[in-house]
Length: 242
Image (cartoon, rainbow, N blue to C red; front, side, top):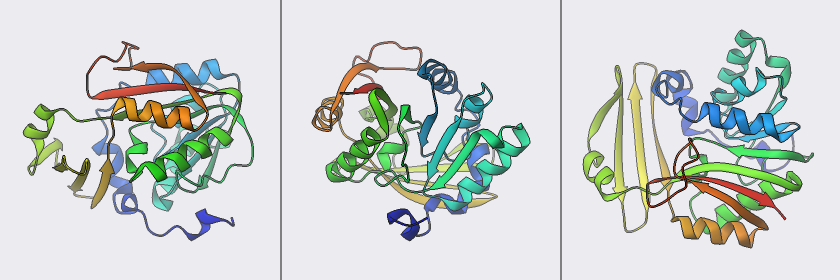
């Protein structure tokens, strides 16, 4: 493919593609939520940051076509293998690209960006670009659904600068900088290691950016059971293109 995605360099996820599934084994609470939204969408789903297909493969198992974009070649390869094992490879269209320049030339009723992938965007300029790209991929009235977080003081205090065993033999370390609102996240295990930077903003800042990029926020949930967001760390946004 041509364009910006063709110039993508190595991703930190390349070195943990085989570690990713056991690392995220316990993260299941969001799968049913995104599958339900995909069922309602009435067409093809675009998933930004598809990873190894943790969300996309269950969506494809309902008969939905999924266009999956990821900046990691190795994660896409793992996703392809998993889709073949699940018998849904023909329903997944996997493409190399990043959140700001996804290689999309069609429009769909639903774009999703699960598992906090938008936290990989470093600043408001990157966030605006990514939201504009998602909007361009949507039909009029189509929806963008994504989840992010803004950490609480107790979470920072409990995890800062410490290696914690997240899953058996898989360790995770969080180094928080509350001045710049960045998290340096490191993970290591028997099948690889990586370090990546994440950045967070508040609920109000996300809403402002969404509105500036041509969205109306239909809902902001505090969890995947659709409880309205109050003041917790997790935020699930449902935004409609206008």
